[in-house]
Image (cartoon, rainbow, N blue to C red; front, side, top):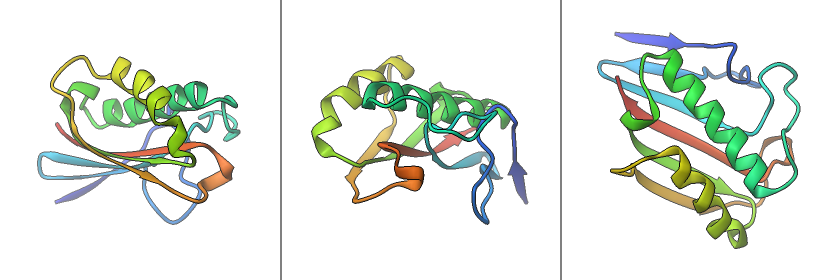
Length: 125
């Protein structure tokens, strides 16, 4: 049975989608950006600042679903500039202690609100 996950600790969806959907023992977290949950404004101007804000939003949605960063099994990361890959990795690894999730990282032309990074995830409960 499908269950919609929503939390005020992460930005509200800006389109016709849910922050996350639970199906069985898995949670599918929609792409999170560095938007401030209270205002919707983009947080930070550097890849480090935006990556940290983005991953905090991923964490908030995971926790709202009863999961955690340690239970994330797959991420897809979208970077506006692949030259930011190394700096993004530095922030990313600070959110995962060990047994890193499977991951794809894709360079894209543009992201919502012209941010620098977006991350979606799949986690177990």
